[in-house]
Amino acid sequence: MRNSDDYVFSDQIGHLLRRAYQRHIALFQAAIPDSELTAAQFVTLCAIRKQDACSLNDIVKATAIDQATIRGVVERLKKRSLVSVSADPGDRRKLIVRATGKGRALTDRTIPFARDVTEQTFGSLNPGERVALDFLLRAMMRTEQS
Image (tube, rainbow, N blue to C red; front, top):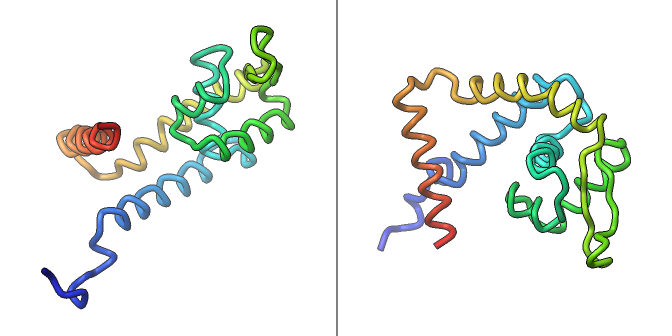
């Protein structure tokens, strides 16, 4: 068993992933045209746009944002008139979320900036390193789901 004195937190995968994510979020916030739009709100809008109309559970599955957080994200998007929320006619307990015209337009305007942010996040990684990073992150997610 290893001694706790040789544990260097900054060498740990969680720390490195967090730092990379923090850098990505900073790049996103600096690049997008709407300073009020967060990364979580953007991916939520993208998920809703892809499915047209969806439940909160559908959004959670698509975005990997937890249920409690997604409720707040959707509420903030609703306050900005970027989504509409209504009861499901078949199950009044279930909420259906749809992007409004304003929400779809904002998503469409933001996507090119988001693509640039992805490029900036990859930074100086060469094409092989980019493929390897993508592969490894997806492999880690598959392990989590097993």
